[in-house]
Length: 387
Image (cartoon, rainbow, N blue to C red; front, top):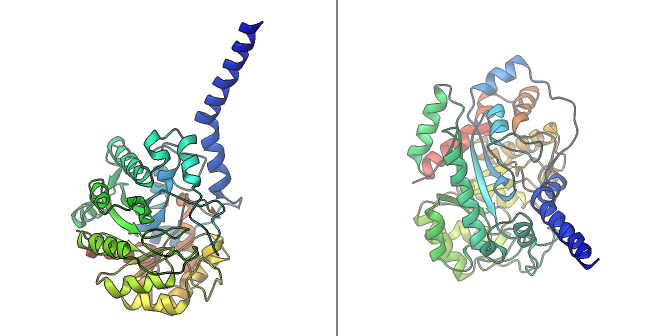
């Protein structure tokens, strides 16, 4: 009898272990990264022809966080390499998410919770990642390198402007290669050690987000409690990252942190994913006046595809936010900032992104405006800013 009890317990434990390994990670992502049901988007011949000539580029997506092979087509999430190729996406910033508070409130979050720790455990990441944001960033950077190694040339990490020029040349010959730029969403990923920036640099880190949903050692988050600007450590990170020709990302930064960055940094920054308060009065978005200040310093603003950024996250709603941004700060400062795979719900995934080209045509955008917003601004920015 005792042996039978032990056998039953062993079977239960094995079943639980297998559930954690094979079922739980997928279930979690299915709840968080959704594509809302919708009719098939209709793309006209005119829009399809125009879209095919644009090297589409997006400033923010988080597939590195999730346990699935990004090189293979998936029914989960918003991106994978086949869908990126179908959508005509040439360049994608791929960020390591390393800590996130429970709730992810736009208004206020303490820094004492860490949901990514549980996700790292559930996805059986290396034990070192369970307690260290830096190890999580390094692990995700290694995953990116693995994707490149296994992609057979269809996916390439972009580290330099020469890499980007080579990518564009390859695509001009018909190659469906996709380029990825490695970033971190919040420099708490450095674990308070400036030397860790060097270690991530070796993995190709090129975009440094300063904060996420909570205040960290660099300063205040837009969704934190302090509202403070850059700390001395934050200033040191901005200075060193800029010296290395890394791009500073002020998405999620408090208004004071944004102003501090603009004061001390002589290189243009990005706000990789967000929206405009004047068209979507959400706590996720900065005031329009600060968006104008960013543009005056050469910043590029990535317009998001989810409700917190655009309020109306239909293609028409996203395009309305894009038009508002163009009218406010000029077309040269507007880009795409999907936040795909970032625990968001959207109405079109990476393979369906041509619906934005279609909708902009329908709304009377010029061909030049469409080309710039859908990719040329992003390409030009990185050609100018990468080492």
